[in-house]
Length: 133
Image 1 (cartoon, rainbow, N blue to C red):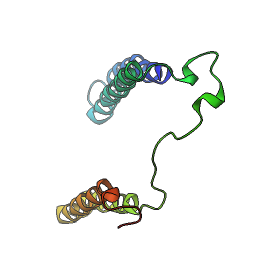
Image 2 (tube, rainbow, N blue to C red):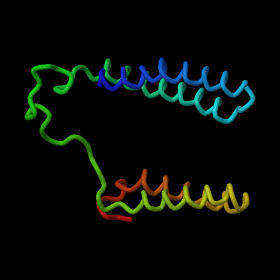
Image 3 (cartoon, rainbow, N blue to C red):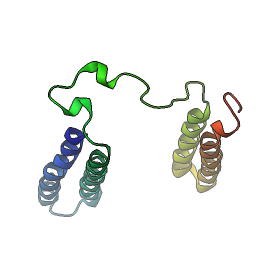
């Protein structure tokens, strides 16, 4: 994970001068783009820092070593829910929430309530057994 962390941390050194140049070229009057670039610097720093912290905790993976073989990373990588409907519920909640930002706040609150239901369902999906929706 060290390569991934350095790629994201390198984004800090790229996006910081881009934000400064953008601010200079707009005479520091256009705030939306400048703040978006500054937040992009923060996002790159957070993701890169998290990946670097995780790389120190996990240790070297086969893809981090020069002599790593493909068969060393075989087996179960994680647990996935191919039959889960909760990501669809959360995507619908996000769509309704963003629609609420454009149409009215009352629609946003409907999306937020749907998001609470979706997150709760997804978190507790396996507490009742497989396929127990």
